[in-house]
Amino acid sequence: MTPWEAAAIFVAGIGAGGINAVVGSGSLITFPTMVALGMPPVVANVCNSVGLVPGSLTGALGYRAELKGQRQRLIRLGIPTIVSAVIGGVLLLYLPAETFNIVVPVLIGVACVLVIAQPRLNRWLSARREHAQPHGGPWLWVGVFACGIYGGYFGAAQGVLLIGLLGSFLDDGLQRINAAKNVLSLLINMSAAALFILIAEIDWLAVLMVALGAAIGGFLGAKIGRKLPAPVLRWFIVCIGVVAIVKLVYG
Image (cartoon, rainbow, N blue to C red; front, top):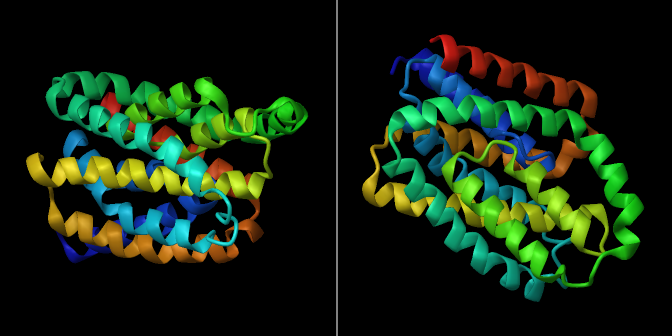
């Protein structure tokens, strides 16, 4: 890896950390960047999951005020999240690489659609939140479990999925839901990262660059991310996603 390539991954990590703290689609920046630089897709995804852990941590800490009173909720949802993220990581490592190359462009496309649809999703959530259950109920547990598998396997826009699930089933404000989303995303990334560190091929320089950038971006995103123009940010993420799809499909 050249110094310029390392710098590109570092900058992508800053953007991903900030976006994950606010929106939840940061992998659509770091993963395509590493693929564009010639890294095999599965290795790039592993490095992305490991490297984004510090950014997830700083993003969660930045919302600690909104986390007050959510301990029991996060324990209930955290256990299935950890288990399912490990399952997703195992699927990534043991399914044929060709499966990843076929599935991931579809997942990125779905993630881009979710990013575009998020404003309407939030309005729909607000309209039905009066019917939400205090602790979410069993369907939220099932949804979080499925989201953990997705996050352990790939993870782009897992934050958007989590916000949709939590907002649908919980009777709480959007900022507190976003804080819970950051913690669950952290658990997904940490669980998958622990598995990958033990048994996967890792480019540690790429991980370091993503980690340093994501830690800075997560801190900044939690502090100032709400002030960013959401439409510009949203379409930038989609453009990155489209580039990734073209790169993966056409090489």
